[in-house]
Image (cartoon, rainbow, N blue to C red; front, side, top):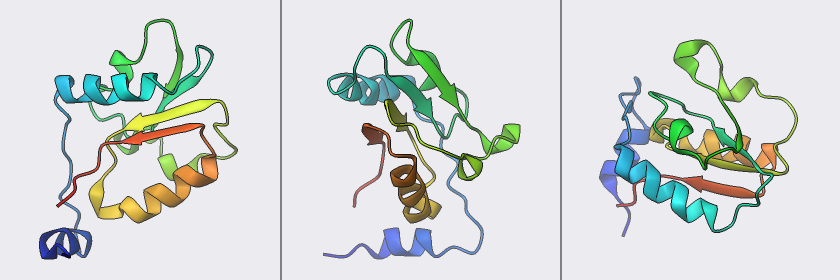
Length: 117
């Protein structure tokens, strides 16, 4: 069954999908990604927001982020995040574009919080 709500959200002329992830939910996502991560992996938050993912990444790990409101655009990244974990809550209105860019970055682990209808 196709969701008309999800389709309508992706077709908005103006995105209204700024959603700050609750800390408990971010921690749950991180704990799932940790099962597949290696100790030396770079943890990357492409959609920093208020930093709830970034500041809850495993203690002592190497980490980095982008945030459009801080003029660090995820889509401007060059290269790859080969030995890395992309773990974040991307904007749903541009999800297809986010997934394509993430695949181009070539991380070993991708764990995004995505609403499913």
